[in-house]
Image (tube, rainbow, N blue to C red):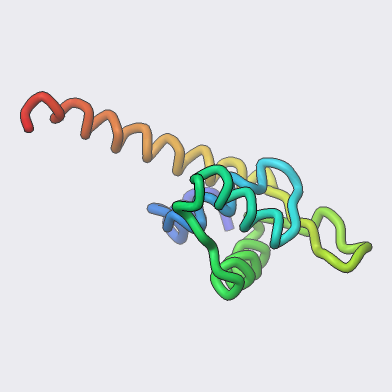
Length: 108
């Protein structure tokens, strides 16, 4: 799947997906991903186990993430280069969205 197909499949991202990918800026296992998202957002974003593991399976199948280590009792995941490109595309989309909103703030 090329990056344009990934963008079509994943953009715009759900908040949970966005924070899962942000968490994987470094290798993490499932609980670490959930904890990172919760701490970063001061508890605003809570990712359920079902959402987390279903999303991880989908991301792995599409080549957005891969297994970094599965030698212990936890599987650790990391972003692939395609995953990093997808995350950058979403961040750019959000920047443009925020800029559009900022341009209108004076009109509200």
